[in-house]
Every structure is written in C-alpha cells, then in structure tokens.
Image 1 (cartoon, rainbow, N blue to C red):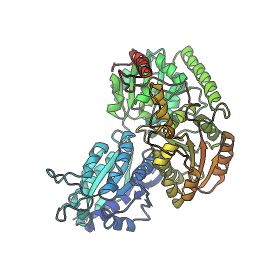
Image 2 (cartoon, helix red, strand yellow):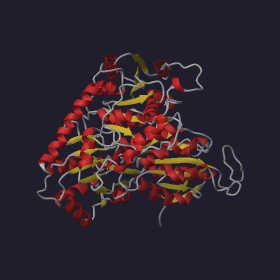
Image 3 (cartoon, rainbow, N blue to C red):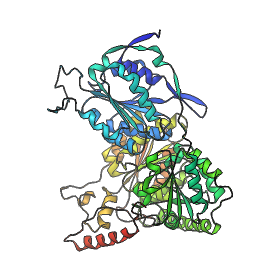
Image 4 (tube, rainbow, N blue to C red):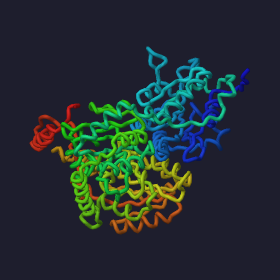
Length: 620
C-alpha cells in the first residue's frame, strides 16, 4: 500500500514544484528557479506559509508590481531558453488582475510561467468578500476567468486532490516545445488551507526532459524536393532556433548549402555579425539587405518563427509566387499562409533536411549578391550610428554601447522606437545575447524583464552584464524594478534615452499625415506646464548609481563607469524626437488609416500606403 502524507493544498503544491528537476548541459537543477511574489490576504496565510518553509529551495523575490513580476518571469524564461521558469504569486482581486498583461506577453512569446493566484472562497459562506467581483447570474465567474484567454493551461483548484492531475499537466504544458506558454492555477483562499492525504510518491524527485519531436519523413522529403529546385533560396531564422539550441545546425545547414540567412526580431542573435551568410534582420524593422533578398527569393525556409507581421511586412515582404517551407515544432506556425509544413524540432529538422539534400548548393551568384547587399547595409548603418552624425539619436547610443560591451553581455529592449533601432543596428558579438521583446511589444518590459534576465544570467554568467535600452515613456510606465535590482544585488545597466514622450508613435502619426497630438509631451493639449523629468534623481532615489550626459561621447564614458560599478547604473541622455531615425530597411506595414479626411495630407498618405497593398500575399 502506498504511504501518504497529510498536507494542505498549498504545502503540496510547493513541495511538488520543489521536486521537479531538469538536466541542462550535464548539470541537474530545479526546473523552477523560484518565484516572484506580492502577498495579500488571498495568498499570504496559506501559500505564504508553504513558501516560507521552502525558501531555500525556491527563493522568493519580492516584487514591486504584479505586472512587472510577470515580465521578470518572462525575461528569466528567455534567458534559460524556456528550459526553466519562475512562478508568480499574487493575491485575489487586483493583485492577480495586474498579471493579465504579463500573462499575455508570455503567451504571445510562447514562454513558460506558472501563476499561483488567490481566488474567492469556494464555500461562498463569507460572500461577498473583499476584492470579489460579483456576477449576479454566474457566481462562479471572477477575475481569474479572464486568464483563460492568456494561458496555455488554466485550472481552478476546487479540491485538494485536483493537484494530483493539474500540477503534472501544467508542467507538461510549460515544458512542451509546441504548446509552451503560461500556466494559471486559481487557488481559492479556503482550499489553499484544506488538507488531504497525498501519496508520498507524488513528491518523488522527477527529472524532466524537453521533447525533441522528429519531423515526418514524408514532410522532409517534400520540403527537400522544393529546396532542391530553388535558385534563390533564403532561410528566415526565428527565436525557435535558439529555443531548440539549433544554432550550430542552422549554421551548418546554411554553410553546406550556401544559403543566405535573414533573422527575425526574436531570432536576432542566431548568427554573429561577422558570419558571411548573415544578411541581416528582415521585415518592418529590418534591413535593406534582408528585405531585398526576401523579395527576390523563390523558396523561403522559415525556421522557428511564427511569421508575425513585422517579419513578413504584413505579407508584402515576399514574392507572390515564392514557396514557403515552415519548419516549426508547432503545427499552427508551420502551416501559416499555406506553407509546406515540416512539423518538428528545429535541430532535428535541419539535420533531416540536410541529409535529404546531398550535393545541393544555392547558386553562387545568388548568395554573392546577397552578401553584396549586406555590405551596402553595413555601410549605411555605420554612417547612421556614428556619434556626431546628426543630433543625439537612439542609433548613436546603440553604437556606443555595442562598441564597449562584452561579447556575452545581454541587451534587452521592448516596444517604442528602440526595438527597431536595436534590431537594425546591433552587431551581434555572441549567439543568444539579444532580447528584443516584440512578440507582444509591451512597454514596461524593459527594466522588469531585464531584472528577470539578470537573475537567470547571474546563475550561470555572474560576471556579465544585462544592458537595458528604454525610452522615457516606458521608464515612466514601469521603473520600480530598479529598486528590485538594487535590493537583490542583481546589477543592471539601464540606458534611458529621453525624447520627450512617445516619439515613435508621433512618427507614425506624422508618416500617415496626422498632426502631432497627445504623443510628445509638448503636443498634449491638456498639458499646461511641460517639463523634463529628472530621471537621474529618480533612479538615484531607488538606490542606483545615476548620471545624465549630454553627448554620445559622454555616454560612452558613463557606460565604462557603469561596467566597473558594483550595482545598478542608470545613464540618461536626451535624444531628438524627429531626426536621427533609421530611414532605410523598412518593409511595408499594414496600419489602419482613414479612408477619408478633411486633412488633405491624410488623404494623400492613405493613397500612398494603399498603393503598396498590391504586393500583399493573400494566403497563397
């Protein structure tokens, strides 16, 4: 007979999590690196009691904001290539609701994150309770139900025995390459403290392995036949290449078959800058070189990418008759736009495709032409990023940091204008060192996600730095994890580039014929007293080293000091809101514009934008 142990639901959940392991590079470690938590009445008494006893096995980082906790968990999971994750625990009501945005970010980016969130009392005896939503016709409906749309796995634990099924299912989801994403467990406040006699074997140590799905041989054969006839092939390398740890296979496949490689935003650091087949980033925030090659290609091998509109130029970046092969572990992604699917792991899939293409090499003239385009793009970006070439700009700051950083330093950016500028101009020194969060394009991810990445980075590369690029808008939206980084001793270098508002959206306004309105602080009609925020003083108040500089040269000197510092550093520089943007390398992007307006500039721009629609693929 199996022996049992009586535990509360909360104690059992934490004991199970603490006994799940994984082997990475020959080292056995816990799948869950710990958690981020803010306690309230919905999770402090029972889950908090369980976490206290497990504080050595599962370190709990105190968050400042539930949303930023979720961003930190996402940054952690990215740094660990989805092989490890963090949990987030929040109280019932607004504490849990604050996690919605970060759950959506994790869902869009296919990242594991476990949410352990308070819920209303199952018995309903004290209803209505503090922070409970009341739906008069459905008493089972609450805030936690909103997470069904942004979770890969969702459950509400209504009996202690449920976790015997629910917890393994949640782990299986988070560790599945195809279905990876956030898992949500709603924990009613009374159920958390209820006891159950659990089988002792449920808490046995378990070592997990990430599944590598071999592709179907018939799909490989069909894809190889198409590639064998290609005269102008190109590989689009996405973030899935890194998650599969398939960079070596990608490099070998491209080199053996002489095929140019272009990168998505998520796949920005698949190849180093100096690799001869690295033709640059593709799409709306891409390069002229990659976009030229994409437009001329007759066969496109899309590896580990979900083909988001910034990659496809809203499906105008490719020739109408180009064949697309989708190599992806997710069936949904592999088959997009009637692609010829190869459903399977990128590492195994590239190897299988290579074995099926003996002797094939892309024509030298095609690949040499792609390299020539790359040389032209490098010359352009070198000019744009040179400090002193025009007013202070994102591009110049990126160049300064790029020149001075160590090869294994990690750079983080998200939303606004910086993702485009980092994607276009960052010269990758080492594989897997760039995190541009554009899956959900979420303002506020930068500092919080950087903190989570730094926690993960510190576990393996403590001597390297996490470098964050953020604008003033994102900084003002979410900055409290500057304080978190100082409290926890997880140093960040935060580059705050102040352009006086939401300048990239102002640029979009102007580029569509609209007047500047409510984007730059100076153009907000309800602002009566515009002034510049003292970001230096604000960051210093949270314990960081902080300084404001006037020029890119001064920025470089400040960055050197930040590299030598022993705690979080914030460097602030004003940049121009109108000049200094990268003007080349942009594919068409579909954005809704007014079909009629009293403003002739809007009518003119609408006509210009719509004229490019002729290049849009209609799913074939």
